[in-house]
Length: 314
Ligand SMILES: [Zn+2]
Ligand SMILES: [Zn+2]
Image (cartoon, rainbow, N blue to C red; front, side, top):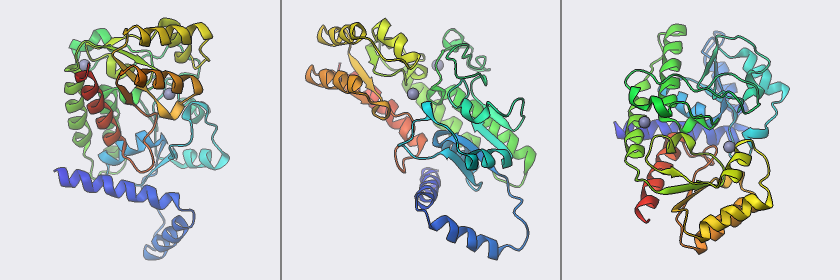
């Protein structure tokens, strides 16, 4: 099973490497065109970010899945799609997005569209009313924290499992011949969910609220100073007072572990990270989207494992 999983990831990664080389896709496309005479009626699956593409690929290993944002150097928060991107979206049979405004650049113009699979409500990019799905069956015990208002929903094990299952169902509906293995994703998410629930009650602060969906399922206490947190939640610039409060919290030992998102690094967040390191506060890096050829499921696992390891140093 592990080898299978590894191979799938390897294949997904290989594809990504190939796609990143400008000439190869043309060569590859040429090959497929000559080897199959019939028109291409295979399912077209498009996702907003590489995160959802990696999840979908684990569910449907043989399907061709395209992420509009596939590189780690593009910030999905401020992304604007090209006409080519939107043409790809219009031709898709299945579209996967996170929702909650995060990738509204993709779904804003589509209106009610049953091709879309999403984790959060398909709201505008207004940072309000980000409702998660109702806690689903078997997870009633989490009802009290199922309603996390944060668009980084791919770090919610339950939402990822739900998207994986919704996607598998849709693929079965559209093309029953494609093998779907949602259990690859849900088993991994269940495993991570257990590790997350075992995190101890330590004080964790974040330079960007990337890990709310992880922390909500743990005993860890979200300890980012309130002003700083409110500003970064709405993607604003923290004030001098917000920054000073954060520095004080680190200096005074009010923060046990710092979560740092290198992808949305700013001079402010970098300085906070350096201060934490000086003070011996463990720093855990959690990325917005996977780096280079890393698979999201591996990146999520690494983030949770690193978090668990950091809390043991406290
Ligand atoms: Zn939970
Ligand atoms: Zn973010």
